[in-house]
Image (cartoon, rainbow, N blue to C red; front, side, top):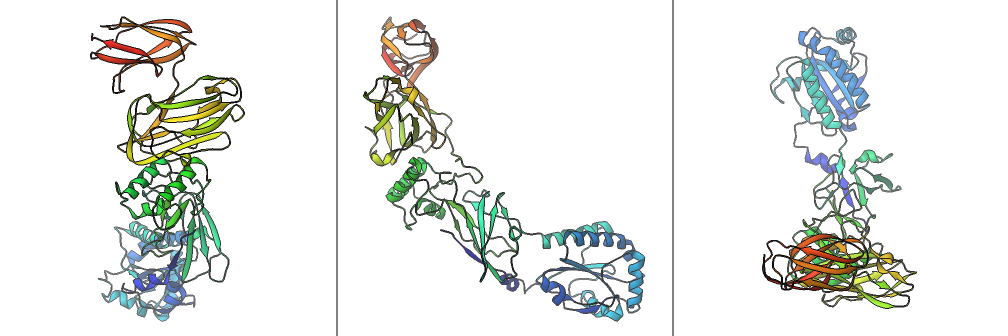
Length: 557
């Protein structure tokens, strides 16, 4: 659904009537052409620059070359949008003298003498109505559309005066470079714009660099208003993750209510006007891949601007990404930008050898106890070698069939809660029920996949941590710890299936890692003498590559 705005140009006219306006004039130049200030210029949205001068004025002669160059430049820069006039303030300067002055100075702009009405035209500017008159030359700029006067543009010399006039013209005629901002104040980069013309066909423009103006559209008629409609329907997952579901849960439960109006728009996935658990269901389907896009909402929606006029002023559209209640969508990317924790959380994924037609379970276990508010992950699997029967959790409340989805050799998992739940070290948090179609090793046919859905866990403080995957070491037979109890050192003897770099860890009774050391294991028997430093006395679980191989009573160093 598009949001749209009416952009009434005529409102700008009423807002500027209080400004000091130039009196109208009708003059005949030295070439016999007549000019009406408003009918021919101001009302045609043209800038008018007046030079009050006289033909024997020495400073005017000094300014003449710079005046000539400026005129030529703006005529090229803004063709048909600017006109200069020279208006003499002396009765002796008849049109023939003005014509000769123009020839002598090689000037091309219209020049008007006393016979052509110059005295009447300059009189208001010499009367003090617009400010003190300091003599000739005096330069006056009259703004397009409004007739507002910019009086006595004057620099430190001829060159600087022309530079100031150029700046004023640029500001008056420069096309507004308009932007659509996201909820975080970033510029939305790529989107579509549609202008509806009463009685005509809509005009479309595709913005690629985040900047738009009426110059994006060709063939627009002159109208008192335009109806402009922005749209963006791509990258539905940009900025959307299970972390958003955590925050929507907290809003529903009243734990951490939304603080910005746009969050209610972003979280209302089905456009019902309310935030409910059904919105969580709909967004989770998008995350898991059940939906390619939300069925009742476009990827981005736009709020109408406030007190904005176009084209003289840019409409203040606000771009809101559906499903992204924390506002982390990147306006020029298909990837989301999460504020990640300083460290990843290690999760262990079983890697057994399996035989054809065997039904087995694969557990995902955290390697340290963590309080979690949510998690998400995805895996690619070979559907010719593996069948996903179900995904379950024994300790995540509310984890059911809506929290996982498989399609086209991919299974995704997303769970969230408003309250933290304890995931204990090396206890299964997610279990995949599988069936093998052939003899294989699991890691050959099932592997983590993060290109579409980054593997993340959200802790009780709302910090996002990437999941770092590891597989248990493939220990063959029992491990032996000697001496046990031990003081100062102990020897770990074990037989390993293949050469591997792994890590030996000592975990306390609360599941925290108290000591660790990286090792190179060889295939076959391994005898490892280990000397933990600064390890308090106590009972420790010994893990090799995340697999418990025994318990050690440590007496200290």
